[in-house]
Length: 454
Image (tube, rainbow, N blue to C red; front, top):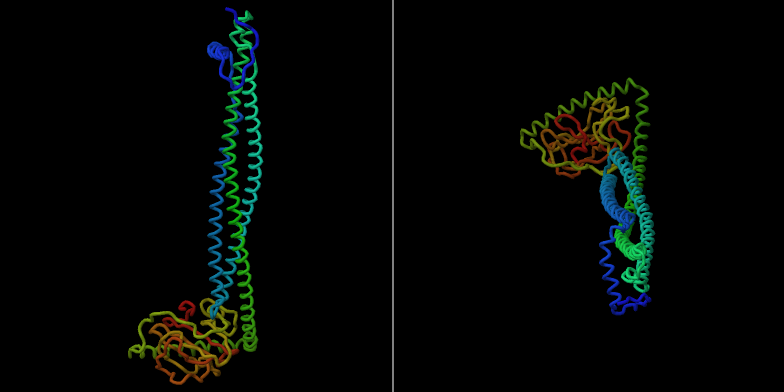
């Protein structure tokens, strides 16, 4: 039997002919014999790209978690700042605001605002970085998608060419009497083409996995960018509102401090006259302290008798209220006012709180109790102040000084009064520079800050 060496065209997608089956079977028989001569290429580059894509996914996950932490921290800071602003606004709206405390709060809020600003700017920078990262990833995804299309097209062309090309079968080549070198060359060609196709197919598979990882990273980045942009806008709106509220609080504090400074200026002008004669001022202060001590002893004795009679409880249950609404012209504590006596380590110590209102404004009992003294405070010397003292318990009394002697009817020593009941009217009796109420709290024989009991 002779084998014809005439070329025969293959019919694409047609049924396998005996000749084609022979070629395929013979090639399978020769593969084990000649496989040692072949080297299958690998695709390290594709593997590296896939590893890089997966590493970027992990990096993005860590980045998103860090951003969530930053957003949560900024939220906590702004919530805390909102609370501080609300408290400061409430303090400024109080009937008798402690301006020193408000100023300290505003200083703290300014520091908090700066921290919030820094956090917000870091968030804006993160958003810009995410935008740039998203653009880079989208470009990379487009390039990788194009590479995948090109490789798929190349593999399709190679498979189509291998199917359509009419070549002399390996068996015909072997039986035609050609040299063994020609046989190896022909077999190597067929096997090499198959190995390259497999390598290309493997590269396409890796490209698809890389593209999938890239696409997932792009989508996650896009989602996080949108979320971060929305959260940034929310925090920016809150920050703008907080800045306006802080500015309003600063303006209100400035206004109140200016009013208080005017009151203090008027007082200092009046006391400048006394300070001109330092010896007389010191003698007056000394005499006043001695007389006030004597008055305090007298009041304590009255309280002792009232307690024995069962008119005053041994302890006071409850809190005190402001005796009147007005502008605070002097807080409890150390002062630069030359008319105050020394005390508590200060050259001039103010033992109460001064509340300024128009003359004749009524003041009220800060708590329920018994009037134990009402009359002139001769501790002030030749120009005494009108004083009302209410005992709330054996160890707690409130003093109301510089009032008018035209007190309400029915009020006298021994009178039971309720919290908020009118017990006098503001005036400028005694050592005073203008109508105001000097309110003091005596706890166990010592004057303390009235704000501690409000």
